[in-house]
Amino acid sequence: MVTIIKNVKVYKPEYAGVKDILILAGKIAAVGEDLRADFGGSIEVQEIDGGDLAAVPGFIDSHEHILGGGGEGGFHTRTPEASLGDLIQNGITTVVGCIGTDGVGRDMTALLAKAHALENEGISTYAYTGSYQVPVHTLTDSLMKDIMMLDKVIGVGEVAVSDHRSSQPTFEEFVRIASDARVAGMLSGKAGIVNVHLGDSPRKLDLIWRVIRETEIPASQFLPTHVNRNEGLFEECLDFAGEGGTIDFTGNEDIDYWETICDEVRVCKGIRRLLEKGISNDRFTISSDGQGSMPVFGKDGQFQGIGIGKASCLLKEVRECVRKEGIPLETAIKGITSNPASVLKLSSKGHIGPGFDADICLLSEDTLELKTVIAKGRIMVKDGKQQVFGTFERK
Ligand SMILES: [Zn+2]
View 1 (cartoon, protein in one colour):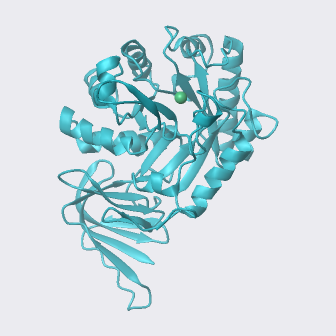
View 2 (cartoon, protein in one colour):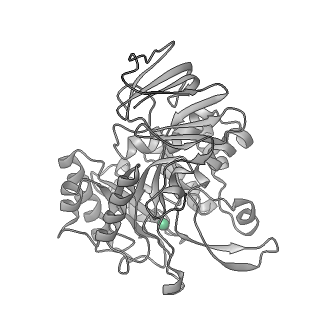
View 3 (cartoon, rainbow, N blue to C red):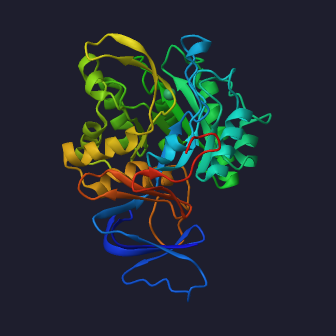
């Protein structure tokens, strides 16, 4: 199957003008003007009219509890696994799975099985080894072996710090995790990233600062997440980004309410502040924390129960960046495309250009609604309707 998208506004993520995109065998073969795909009828060619649409790279969610998470209110509060539809209906064509608080009831065997299942169903998947806990619960007998020898494992995490649910790692334990991940990443050509869950304690990034100050490990080895959890933490994370680190915002579909009860930093405002500080627009990512457990409140602020983090927040946050803060789409979209691809060393992901995987989202140009999702050349969502379903999803 050959697919050609005609006359679409291409964001590579940099804006490249109105172009055609030719897709062959799951890869982007060409991006240019007046491209032709005529094989004399010997190969079926699918044409998509790109008029009024913007083409952006498929979204990369660098922190998603694909296996389910939660459980902090007892076993019945364990959240369900992500379905293929949960991801592709929100434009996600690449996901990095992680385990959260519960590294006992869920483990690396199950996480990798789930990642393979989603890959079989059509998207690209990776994983971090471990969970909140230290020592890290690995699949093989070492963190280094997990990163070097398990194809899908690109780093370690989410290691929890500055949180009452953390294993309270000592500096020595924490620095050993970072050094093992760094060297294993180097030896296997992977990022070896340390995805760090930041809690809301006043210790903030203390452990990370010590590693950067007292060892040779650079800030770029870490991808701290939940950086917008509160104002004080965010300020310190901006300093970290200023020193060459990349910071990961957690999207929030219910931020209108959360803003009224705490000082969680709205993603679009945080990104504007980062840019105003003169920090490179390569230094931020946005992830969903999808399938994690979240308290749900009614309009009156009453606790209504436990809900599930939604992957839909990724595009919603980008939309807010553009609409509320006037950040150009080509800048905002980097947070869920080229920036995670770069920090996670996913070399075939995150860009629209020849040779990259054909992971593409088509958005309506005016409303930035998601219309079409293509993953590895296959149309997963068309005109807003899911086309490819997970094994146990209903059509
Ligand atoms: Zn977390």
